[in-house]
Amino acid sequence: MEDKNRIDEINNFLKFDKLPVSFRLLFLVTVTCLSVGFVFNLTQIWESHSGEGGIFGLSAESIRMQYYGKRDSSILESKLKTTMGGFATDAEKETIIKWIRSGADEAKYNSEIKPITEKNCMVCHGQESFRPLIGYKEIKEVTNINNGMGFKTLVRVSHIHFNGMTFLFFVSGLITCFARIGSKKLKWVKWIVIIAPMIAMFCDIMSWNLAREYENGVYIVIVSGAVMTAAFFTQMSISAYQIIRSFFI
Ligand code: HEC
Image 1 (cartoon, helix red, strand yellow):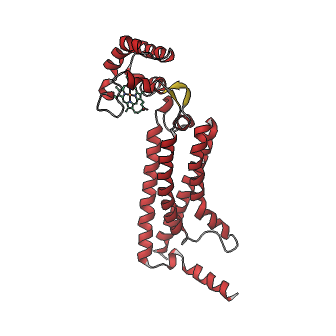
Image 2: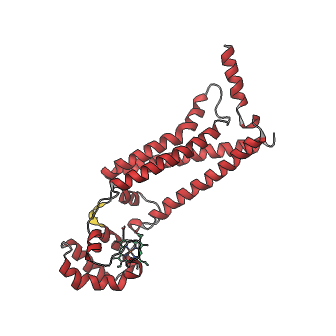
């Protein structure tokens, strides 16, 4: 019983309003920077998906394209119908799409396709560009079916996210440990608030694998991503509010 009282006492001591000012200031600037950083993460996701599939902003379709691909079409064809659509006339696009569907052979490339791409695409897809489309070999690569994210890319983004975001949510969770959430009876509310972002992140990253294999896996990606974002900002707003308030009481 005595032990339990001591634990309660320590617990009550480890709260924002009982911490030295130096800790509270450090926590407050950390909360601010982490939150702004997270907004940039979200902006980056928005930016990289917007326009994809011809749809403005973030959509299930564009996320599906990223992970699962568009298996009834090639990268070149889907790009010509979306973000690259403005760089060729309808007749030119039709010629290219017909060529892709008929097997994309080299002879026809030289006679019909090369003149179109040289005229319309080289400004951005020349030799030195991020995606040269200068000859048959290069174009042929983007006429293959769009199978979504390759395993190598998936492993790379997964390990970066796992390492980076575990660290992020450890810091945000640790700071939130000093908040007053729930009551003595409802301790579990706080426990959930502390671990929710990390668990949602785990589901999110694991579901990328699923979304590569199953078209509808994309909905798990979306739900876990949304839960993760909501859980993170819940932590940050409770912490920021309680720290700021602690300076005035
Ligand atoms: C004004 C610059 C510009 C022009 C002109 C342009 N593109 Fe692009 N292209 C881009 C950018 C930027 C991207 C990357 C963003 C995206 O995928 O939408 C891209 C991506 C692509 C991709 C996807 C490459 C990949 O690896 O995912 C293909 C294929 C493509 N373009 C084909 C074309 C074709 C064909 C033309 C000519 C009809 C063309 N582009 C004209 C800028 C341009």
